[in-house]
Length: 188
Image 1 (tube, rainbow, N blue to C red):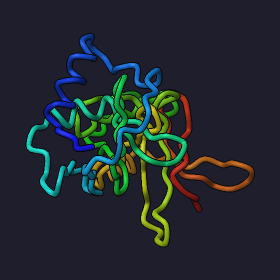
Image 2: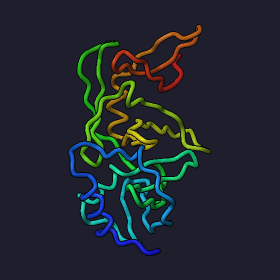
Image 3: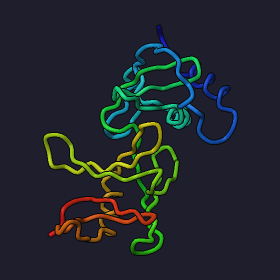
């Protein structure tokens, strides 16, 4: 089955008439197939070998994207479900801002699709490493299994707010946001 992005975008716009994100957790259509859409590690959405020129389509598609238990990413509407390829994370987080101080500070990020979110219970921060390397992989959970990776500049901005704390007799590095301590690494 072939896919036309413009047609899918129109269907999504017709379905999503109200502001906010659509209720894709309530949509469970059968798999329509694999779409020739890939999100590169640097956050580019590439359809049939060409970067998507319309930022509005990327923004729209980011609202109907979910990662399922099989680890795969899907664009989902009430009647269609297309598997896409994602090299790392489908979204990037940049423009880190911190308000407040200490354990009462709030860290916020803006994604490459213009969504601003606060690190906290609904958008936790997790810093792992890439498999086979010690390169940090800082991500914030967005929704429906989708994550945004902090770009290098945002990660360095975050590092300016790192504190050391003692857990079980060991120093641990991390940051606070909304009163929650997010581990970033070992201290000492």
